[in-house]
Image 1: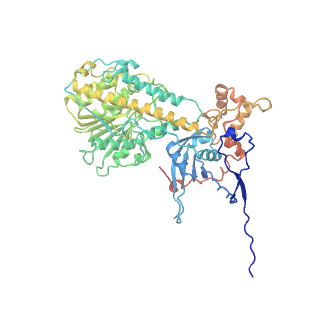
Image 2 (image 1 turned 90 degrees about the vertical axis):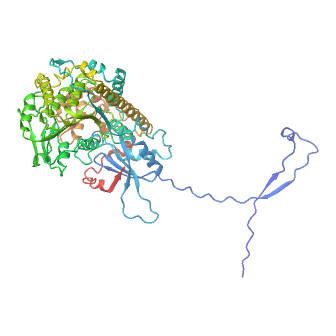
Image 3 (image 1 turned 60 degrees about the horizontal axis):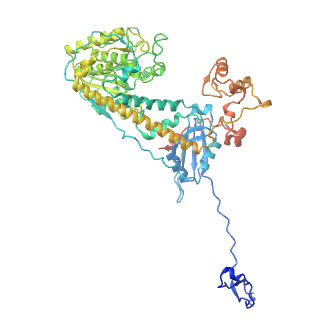
Amino acid sequence: MALNQAAPPTYTKTERVASMLPAFLSRVPRPSQQKQPTVCVDVVPPKPLSPAPEVLPPVVSVQKIPRGCAIVILRDQAVIERCVLQRVAVIDGVCVEMKRHMKESKVLEEGEEQPSGIFCAWGLKVERKIPVSEEGIEDFFNSLSGKACPSGLAVQAPFVEGHLSFPLSSEGFAMLSFMIQEEIANKEQILSSRYCPQDVIEASWAAKDRLDALWARPPPPMARSLITRVARKELFPHSGEGGQEHENRAGDKLAQISEIVDMMDGIPQGSAFLDLCGGPGAWSQHLLGKKDLALKGFGFTLKAASGGSEDWKAQEKDEWYEDLYEHPDWTALWGQDGTGDLLKIGNVEHCVRGLAKEHVLLVVADGGFSDDAIPPNLLELYFYRLFLAELLTAASCLSAGGKFVCKLYSTFSDSSAALLFLTTQLFDSVTVVKPISSKCTGPERYLVGSGFRDDAQTSAICAALARSHALGAGASPLSVPLLTPVVPAASLVQDASFSAGLKQMVTAMCERQTKALNAVVDRADFLEDVAMECAICTDPWARPAPRGKNMVDHEVVVEKVVDKCADGEILCPFCTKTYRQLERFNQHLDKKHPNEAKGQDSVNDLPTPSRARAGKSQGKGKGNNKGKGKGTKGQWQHS
């Protein structure tokens, strides 16, 4: 039997027919006004609203690695693409570099997406002083959800990267100077250059000052140098690049120089080479790696910690590689006094006598030094005597037809120009090159001479170089940096071919360096502005000093820092200084941080949004993460 079903209820509402009168008349009562008819309209009952879908944050997971880096898996592709373009973030007051990461997972099921994210790095040294928390990293990436990508992130370099090559030649022999004497090394020696306009030189110095000011700018953010490095890498990806095929960048640069000028062309099997000032030995490694040539190598470099307190010194990291000492075809030379100091005439003569019976067809020199005592923009002048010693040693050791490769810096002065002129007299062809891996922002370049001439003119040049070298008497370049030119400046100017070639090289490289420096500083400022606009903690130092019962005594600060330090090092909570002696640490606090030490806790206790939530959980798992990062490089690939 069928059940009677009641008809669904009908909902009605009454609508009044619109009046045809104007609005101001429709409100006036009229006796003849009749009641308006009503109209019934069916109304469908509203459907119940479905609940809004849950919106998940961009961050899936954060894995912090004790080495000062982290891997962030994200579900928001827009956030990933923005971070890849932005490259730099400020998290917990620290500059962090960001790169794309793709996880190499197992075979994915159908419809499953490949996990992707961002690799963040700020470095172990920074992590020890200013830890970046996982909570802070998560907060930063979640804060980017729904935000538009900043404009201007696309990189525009001022010029296209590439190898540079400038040939040098001379028309004839010039008179040598017999009145060599010490010269004052000052800015006037540079600004009065005959081979580059003064305004071009001053523009280059101004660009260097901008970069120095960027480095000297105080925090926040911490580790600002990371932004400068990222800016240079974005603009000039090959600049400063190296170390892929050799233990350091120097080996890769020599390989590029060899390709540019065919350096190994014409070098017979079994020939010998001399590596001057080449520690730790990447250039020797590259040449010994030419197995088909079976070269015999000799190395001459400054021994670490040799000489008095006023002398220039090499560091232990510049000592020869151990595998070179063990190589059967390579020998280290140290000179007459065993120091390897090329500025001492006795050591040069000892080296020449030791190689007298060898068929030396290649001399390479990668010498250089930096010291805070060298005045700004005068490195070329303080490098002069080392350049002279390297050229003298090469001309005294090379066999006919040999080749010479030597690192240079800027060549504005008459003294440097005279040495370049003599190379055109000593070799059949001379070229100044700057490989693509040599930093665009630096003055570094390389002199390459091919086809050594072993004749009477060469003997006269070697005698003049020896006289000039002896005048230095082995003194430190910090005390006797510069000598008068070996060839009078007037004679150099009269050689039109040499002057024109040198002017072209010096001016072009100076202008190029200026463009690179300004571009890097501009890009670094832009990246910092973008990073600070979206920073989670823009100023980790900004909090008032505690007062009253919360006042922190100097002794309490010291005790807390000593308890937190590792490896016997005491880390200053107010700057990046590190000390191993408690007494020196106390002196540092009294001198540099007298107010902070009496009114502020250590850096690790400074408030940030993430640390406020993390509480005492910061740094958890430090003891359990041992070995956690092992194998990370094989599991993750970044670009």
